[in-house]
Length: 387
Image (cartoon, rainbow, N blue to C red; front, side, top):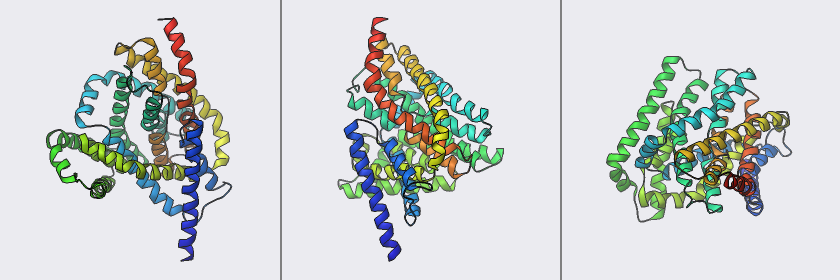
């Protein structure tokens, strides 16, 4: 009973503190993710107020956070959109992959961290934060701009790439042999193909099974199905996050919109817990030594994302000002990057990887939205003058 009371006290204090930090982030106009990470650093080993009893509970909540993040991300797309995105934006998507995965991989190899850590760091620097970017587009009124579909198509391509990348990384982190790793990747590709096929041809049957006029029943069905598939994916040595993402893709239309609206508060709660848990795993005394490397890496990948957006928007016939906005919208890093780093840290890829990734995400999660608000008008004027 005593331990339970302490658990409630600690977890309640964490959640209440996250609420206060979220309110502060809204007032300042930045993403709350950097503040959540800082809270985790404060509560973790070496922090000012280490947690004891509730850490295991928070770890479970963090896993739920990852599943709900990827589930709701999948709900934003349908199978038709994904197939269309692959056909129309494959070239820009490959440019995005090459330009932005390379810096992380090269840095890890230069530091002597080995190929597994290099693959993990490639993912950390590659993926744009869909959540932060979507918020930036909405807050600044860019949703109706001509470049916005280009930005969204790149995000979809990244999500599909993650569906293949995460099983590859998971296999490497588990130390599987080449044959076993190939089997894991084949299973992941087969799962993606099957889900897309089912969603395209039999989506109405899945939706009929999940659909309910009662919001409580709908939430229970969607979350239950996501957890079931995530658990099955984990048993098959495919990322649970990928399984949840595929469930989201399988649902579309009004049902997906309703489920997304109902799950958003639950997702936000456990996603915040996830960012805190990542901070708990990172020794804050290692952040400062990694800050210089993280800042340099952030600068390089800000430039490569800007180049990516400009290239993709130019191929779509967007004017120069729109190209610049597209590039800036792609700068933020957040949830996916922390998921990847969290997997690598948990598997012991390299002791310094977590600190570097945390510092890197802290910089870009905060600077991305600020760049959109402050730097974008200046760049837009420069682009307009040279048009």
